Image 1: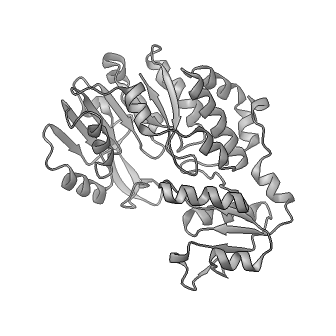
Image 2: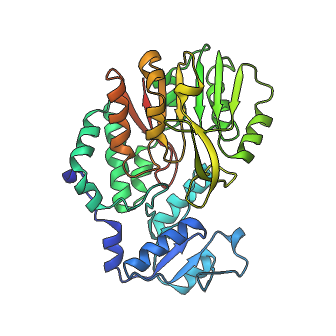
Length: 350
């Protein structure tokens, strides 16, 4: 596997760099990247933000610049993106920005600890090799390698090279019918339910929606109130019934946290005691345990699976192995949809 990683590790490159390093964006992602830079004794020179966000504020003791101010201050500089983008306009802007400056998007963990670096890749090389061998088509293998190269190098061109639209997945892999019984784990406000139904003409058999965040759950109820045969559960998905500490961010990124409040979690096998044909899991790093919690359902009904593969470093190799340990007749596809960093990289299993 290591011979297929063609790029130098980003953190090592930054350590040797002589050009000024300028952060693009503020917030939690920037804080995590600054923490890593400080651990490695790498300094950054400034921060800039999109024009609409610049109001003379300070970030880590430095006045936030506009891009134009950064370009006027430095003849050349390196850009580290510190936030996620997925809309077409912003993706096109990032692409054009990377043509003017050396731009990188560092990978920092959403869940779990530790960086995805060459040491991590080397320590788990056999596991990555095994997961690579389990993929069902050449496109999945290209996505796998491109995403690994992105995680190591931070170069966004790898993500642009392997991205595909969701339509391809729904039309050529998942092939949803008008009679699906769907389990949506991490239902947020019903956005993926609406996505599913756009490919089934609004038709389905049953829907079971799990959402642990209380505010998100209220949005889910409000936005799906017109749908019949839909059961909503203010629960997180896990491998058993228990209360766990959960940080409520009232957004897509609400997740387990030692600083959180107790929230009830339960398993698919306990809650959904009937045939299902499709399970989606976007649950901020709890996917591995949720698969365990759906073991009987998967064994008995072999539902199509849509499982996010980007929350934890180990997701790329742990999730395919876990699924195939339950049923070895799944075909596993990997796709990356337009997003920087490598979020919206998902396993689709049929």
